[in-house]
Image (tube, rainbow, N blue to C red; front, side, top):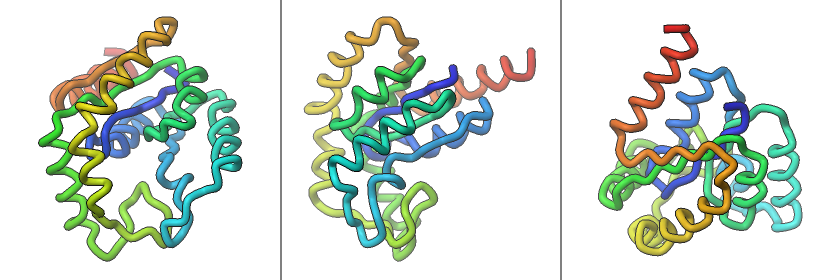
Length: 173
């Protein structure tokens, strides 16, 4: 596990999980939200965005978290491991609302300076509809990557168990 792509709905825990995974495996972690959004919530231009992701994917070791469907194939092609955080709609919705209140008026750790936490209706709708609209597309896409190690984590207990097992393996237990 040297190149790990972490995907899932907003609020699924991608960034928190990726940080824990990076600490456990001693791999650099890249949060796509941090790279995509410029101060003031300005998007990175499409042509530049693709080259940023290609450059990251060309590195020998990484954990990259985020969806960004336009560059997902770049990351999945380069990854040796794909982890899909397949969490429930209710959990993800709860987490994005909680996150809004935890970081109200400030940026969260995995976000660009100048991008204070916000919760707009479009994002809430996207999270709410993710399992209906996006999950089937992701599961279908993953069928094209049979040569990769694919891990689907369906609840927070699965997430904790994977981290625990990896820590034990790192410690030679």
